Image (tube, rainbow, N blue to C red; front, side, top):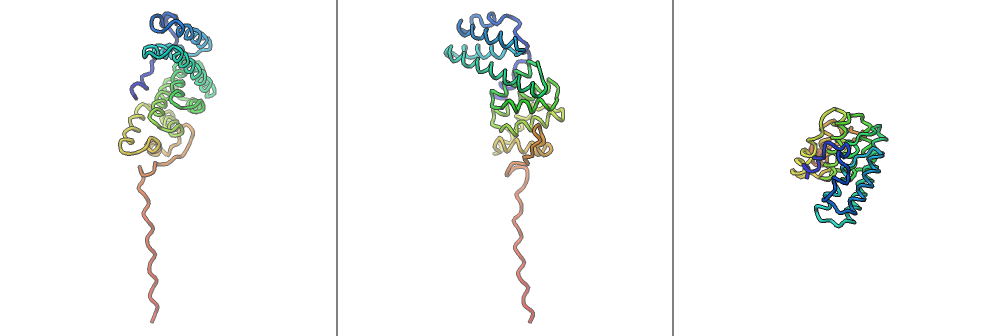
Length: 226
């Protein structure tokens, strides 16, 4: 799962060939017509086209009915629009790789506000794109958005790659932590959880910090003087 989620194409800068040619023989004509329409409109707005084409080809290859493929492609188009708007609100415009990664994160369960929070950190375009891809992977394995964005934010602020975070979370999960507990423990270890949102989550229950000692019993009263 992680390998698949992290392996987004690195060249989502628009089709080198016309959309119709890329779909020829791989999807039904009615699916191709919708993808061409959506792709042309997306390209005119500065959005990447590859995610639309890939979704159509993927669904058709699996034998999904045409109407469901079309519906899925329309969802991707909306996610691209949402990601582009969220990035714009965070001060990032026109980066098709970041838009595609943002749409991928939204598809995994994050929100436009989450994307904006990461964009406002001011990391390089390459680092932000990687952060969004990893955020999508963390969401897919169950890390709640607040912990997810804080974890990625910590790495982006420190100019460190977040690529190992899914593995670290899953290592903790293998020892009995929930995804939220694993992420919170990593936040705590990295400096208290002050990530993209500046939140303070602390260590997860039962992980990272030993339970407090029970209070000592009171001293018995002194015997009375004779």
